Image (cartoon, rainbow, N blue to C red; front, side, top):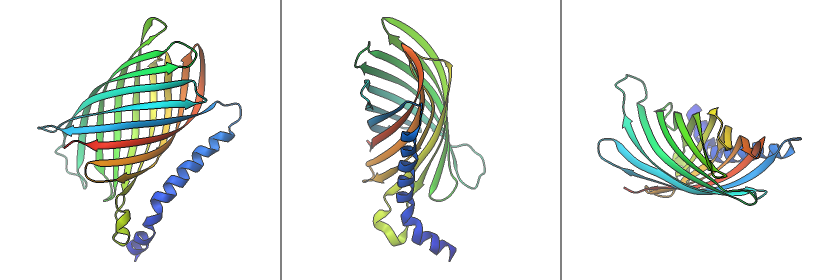
Length: 250
């Protein structure tokens, strides 16, 4: 009986999550004495499975801020290796080791443009706590090489992300079974602050749809708190609307 009740009302979970997310972000419009910006972010994510648990993946995207101060373009190829630890648990564990390189170009409207070359190394631990809920802990170290106003600068930061995906499974609403709810909260530690943008925290709650085994799309509103160091140093609250396209190449 308990499961039947849950199954019947499961249809409202994705809608509730999306509305809750938009409502939370709307509250930041009322912040006083704070800088509130809006970002619009579109990216394409591709992956290709290799032999021996290796995977090539990467993303390319475009971001713009409103009021319009800059536009950013980037590409970020990477490779990962998956390992399944020989540990007895109720749900299977999966470890992923990530290595990648990102190139970010920021086109400012009234100051010199900014180039960042970023290398990273990460470890992701994934397991399914429930049949429909997958949890990830992702730790990443990033080395940032910034070129701004004819000089190079180096910065180092670490980031930790607690993320999850709630997958739709309901026999009474099978037409909606391709929907899923991604969410995460991410913290940043800037050991050497970069010239440009230094993220502090991100919170995301979105809605995704699996088109077919090769394609899926996500709409993910999020809140970003950042420290900006471009001519002046200040912190901002960014409301970000992100559209993501995922493509499996095999």
